[in-house]
Amino acid sequence: MSQVRKTETPEDRVVAIMSKLPPKSLMRFKCIRKSWCTLINSPSFVAKHLSNSVDNKLSSYICILLSRSQVNVLPDKSWKQEVLWSMINLFNERVAHSLYYDVEDLNIPFPRDDHQHVLIHGYCNGIVCVISGKNILLCNPATREFRQLPDSFLLLPSRLGGKFELETDFGRLGFGYDCRAKDYKVVRIIENCEYSDDERTYYHRIPLPHTAELYTMATNSWKEIKIDISSKTYPCSCSVYLKGFCYWLTRDGEEFILSFDLGDERFHRIQLPSRSEFGLEFYYIFLCNESIASFCSLYNRSEDSKSCEIWIMDDFDGVKSSWTKLLVAGPFKGIEKPLTLWKCDELLMLATDGRVISYNSNIGYLNYLHIPPIINRVIDSQALIYVESIVPVK
Image (cartoon, rainbow, N blue to C red; front, side, top):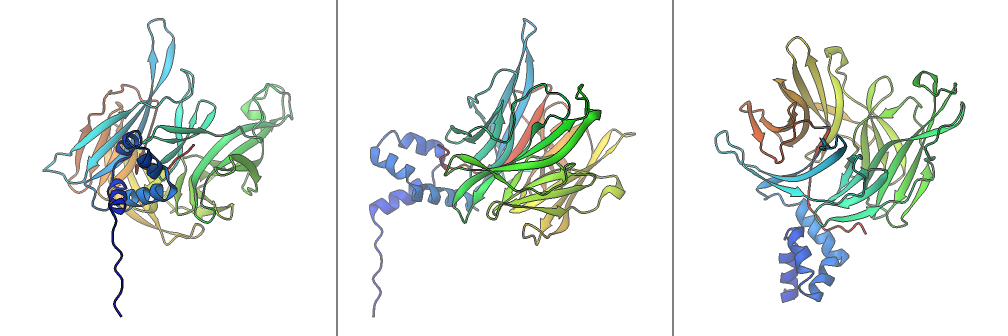
């Protein structure tokens, strides 16, 4: 018995072609034809476009989202915080020692005053979770869409209280996608304390148990969740999302990774490889080829140089893990910090003069990237490997 072959319709071909186009083109097409606007906004098309973007193994370049900040002093001696976001397309193939790339500046009107920072706290499926001033925002840089999250009900307003009055402070954020609930979530860790003296100095600070809350996009609301970690535990890095978990580099006298399962809403502790006996200290974690990776570095004071190691976490289930050393780089002079590993042998770094550098570990060559404007004094600098999407946040 012969099988009936499904015939591809012209509409199917349109969807197949459009689902491979960049978001910028699709945003223009929404204004051309009403039927295209309906198609591009449909959940099935958004999912197909995201799948194509994530699975595009034939792409000739890697996209990096770079965030930088600097302080500008104005003629009247006042100052403002300038936030610069750029999209860097780094092409995979080198020609001799030359590295090819292009840069697009992203003019995103973050809601903030002139003195406030914009800091990235998480990323998933083209959506970036940021703190902008006092606001938590979900932002899609490719579509320029924002969603401002409602206020916390666990964070108390800032005030000058007396001794033994509760003080709450924002700890860290995590952001990701819960595949079971098919919903985007934000987890927030809140640090609590009180003071044993009316002066409320650091030396009179008494740490209290942390609290935590979870935001879900579907309900647009927060709820309190259980967190059972030491009051002296402090997440100290931007979160990294991978396969239903959020991860933070964390310290409580020793360094470890704190993970949060967005599905069962539970926190777990993951040990890092022991490097302290070699004088190396872990600084932050990042995503590398569908694995969690960590940077540790050693500063040599006598030579004013830095060396770094990159470790990859493998065979992990969110709780148990093992680690493999992927790369040793350096010593380098004039390097502030590594930013991310964008290929297995290409390390993106920030120089002390504010410039961005790509280092190839195979040939031992440094390429300075011209990313205008050149900033003389970088206050904050963050970079992540970015996949453009049309996932809505509104």
